[in-house]
Image 1: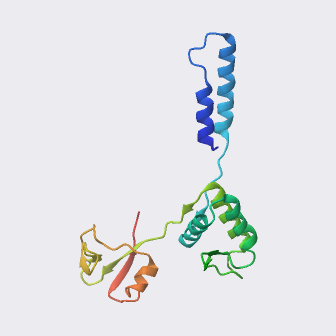
Image 2: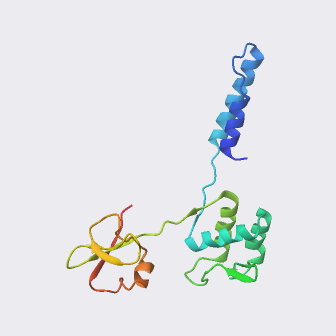
Image 3: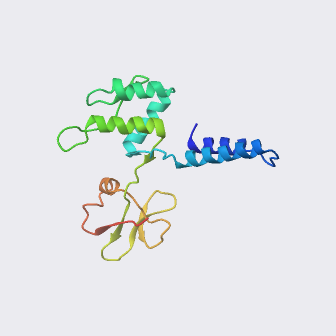
Length: 182
């Protein structure tokens, strides 16, 4: 039961149109209980990277029970490999550990919190490529089969730096990469 369900349950218990002193005192007690529940801080959902969110999604699909999911993270994932077997395929969380990197304990804590409280996926910064000579942006046609330069804001490509690098645009001197403001 979460906070919203508890608040709703308490509000549903109130006696409407009470006529006796006991009913009035009962409602006052519920109002006091409600104020205590509303003062409770709910834990924040951890923010996971895309890789972590994908890994958690696969883990949840493979192991339905929360207990098994937590076991994989806390016990089976000792050391550097957070992995589980998914129908013959070894599913590993791609992490580098060591100096200057995140330690396994903090990663485990974040993954455990994600299983218990839910999680949010880290929003990746997006960029667009502007042609230096024309000032037009690299866009994709509506069938997604080709590219063109234009100012049509509906088709301007907004990609991560990794995606721009894969397209060969990041190192191209003809383009200027600009961060997209959300």
